[in-house]
Length: 301
Image (cartoon, rainbow, N blue to C red; front, side):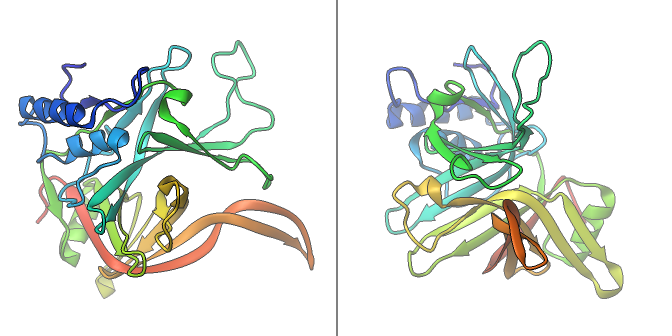
């Protein structure tokens, strides 16, 4: 265990999955000890969910994305990965929810070698952690038959992970154009939450991540968020392995009630009338009706 109040062990022990009740009790005890550092139980719930598949479906706050990491513990490579977004999938029928942490991209590397540290046949590498598993995207220069996405148990990849989920001391919801403009101008870190539901399956999702680009149009009092990648869930059906529903996407919105996504998908390259190759590219467009929230760290007037 750890005395650091922002760090939680969230993996699977060598003997198997730890007791859900024991895990919950440990997290609650840790949170009480660190009550001055957290806004509610959200961080503990999210840490626990990497093991148990459970999450707090009532998203009331955001994490501090500048200081949030998945820290792995394997002796061969105790790699630390920056958390870039989180996606929570809520199932009202069963009363359960699952949180997934999408980490930042890196490139395929010859780790700890003396030289030639990047593979010549290089590819983009991006992991998503959640529900005791890791979904890994490997994007080569062209589409290949196998290997774009793989799912493995957490402990099989980089050992039992720990997650750091500090939360900001003060969070302000930017519920007016003036607040959005003022937070943008002042340089406050901004986080967005997009919530939507599929009424056929009953599944609901909340996608949260830092706003990397904010457009402001003062004459028309307009804004537009453009950020990504995020883990976009396909809620149109219930997957045998829920993690299979996740895809990489960028998100844009300029109103509270809908968001547009561009999803990474196989995309043909056309030269004249001939298809010369297929690559993975952000090309599939989807519009989702729902609710967008914009939050800022610190006080905003």
